[in-house]
Image (cartoon, rainbow, N blue to C red; front, side):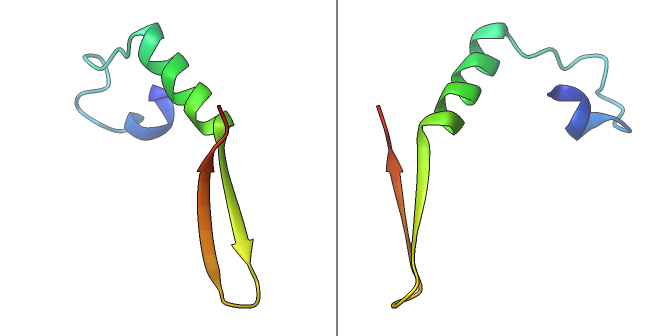
Length: 49
């Protein structure tokens, strides 16, 4: 994951995310659901825990 954002950065060797951080972000993104309401063009975000 870190490679995607800092491939050409001067800090690429110093940035090492902890496993807990990566797991938290992955779990959060899996639980997040975005519901689009086409009639009113609104978006609702819901965390599905």
